[in-house]
Length: 277
Image (cartoon, rainbow, N blue to C red; front, side):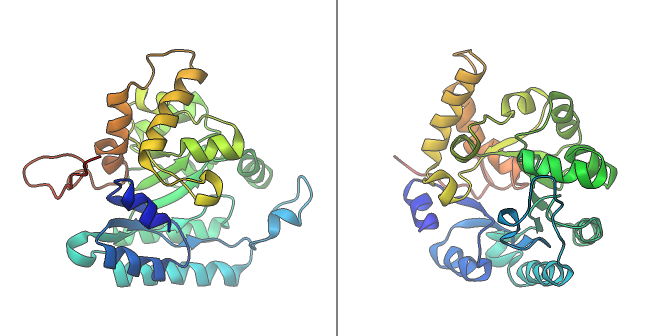
């Protein structure tokens, strides 16, 4: 249903983190959509957040981590490059707090060896910040930088908790940002620092995030919310004019996903598609 809603609203390219991803990949194949697919890699039990007290560290399940990594590798083997690269795959560590340091290093090395991008939730919440700080004694951005994750292969979703200084470092390292205004507005009542990221020279793409958090998978809606929320938070009606959020939904989003050379704008030689509203 998410895919059908997005297609009906004019979206032609998706970066999907959903489960069960192998079955979902079949829908992308049949419906002709372009997709960058990932499978959740995590070692934390699904219900752990409801079982822990404040300050407790997540327990890591090594078997769960191994199986989820194998699932993502299988996704890459079966779908990466499908139909002249219409469907490609990425590595999907759910977040730096959801994987052990050992498994994160395995993911990073796979990304290098296979030249595959990484789609990860980064600095998305106070929960993540507390887990990383309590376990490693540093913030998420410093933690990832020291372990070699900050480069052009990283697509960082949300960045809600990132400071201006961290945003500057991320953009200079050529990390891309995915902004999900509707979802973060509903779930956290926050406005992620997309304007700062663009000012620092980075690419920002718009996303709708999960349906349960956003209740909507329509890019037009995300463009509107992005413009309105940022005008309010910055108290500036000139922040994010229409042309800029349109670029974030098209060519900037394509660059953020690492496929801007092929799609995102109407140019000779590109595989772009035109939707008419």
